[in-house]
Image (tube, rainbow, N blue to C red; front, side):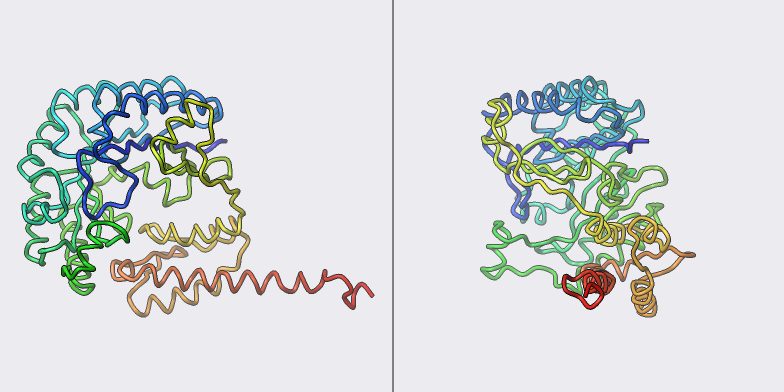
Length: 402
């Protein structure tokens, strides 16, 4: 039986570019919106037949700012997906929005077109912190946007927050979390600020602007995990928390290694055993799709050995974690050396075990890059030890052959 499929649609347009953002997004390119719509529709029509046998059960419009693209264009894309793909009746359909670019009419249009989940980029409740990010909204607009989301009868709302911001301390972070909890979203994504090379924020830091240090960010994170648990939001991934039944089904596809197809410049796909991405250039993507040119940037068949590495790397981002016999069965690899390391981590309070399943604790999530890197090195060493004897046995001119 074919696996369920996710569809990601990248909308690269923004009213303005945030100082921390390194996603492929563009401000001031509204002149290409209609051409981009044509290219996306053409690409979906071309791709749909290739997915026969795979039912689409999640659709995600990400950005950029999809709401800035306008409800009419988004409605056309939703119609195309419903027509060209086997779209499940209970599919989760998410649209990312900024608080300054939504209104009741737009949200009602999206709801009638099939969208059933809204993700709002809030980031902070404080004007000085929002200005430091070059965000185009204030918290009053957030509250108005949430009211509009509820008036449009959306019952699944996710809010994004960032901690570790310029000018932010623990008291400010706690106040933001409390104000957001008062809005009663079903889902929260809470990310630590990461300074990406080449962004305006990176330039500001190079010139001497101070940010909360690692210890301060760690304290903010651990307080948040505890506070959200008390408020009824179960952590299911490093940065994601949900009320029961409201985990992001689409994002879980990435972390659980499930297939998905992307559309748009810079969008990635993992489908049919192959991972591929499209050119990170709006004009090249439009001309390539509409003119029959090349739009693939990279394309690779993924061997099972690499899937085993991804299993560790992605599953350990989640509270579901990894399981011994799942690992042995799927990848035919020895779990013992990995388990020995996990037991070391358990003594440090970084992992916990439930029967045969292991997951990182909140303290472990704070150092997850280091821990997962060590586990991947152990896996690589175990794989080489298994492979080298076979190579020696089959080497031309070996004693066995002579």
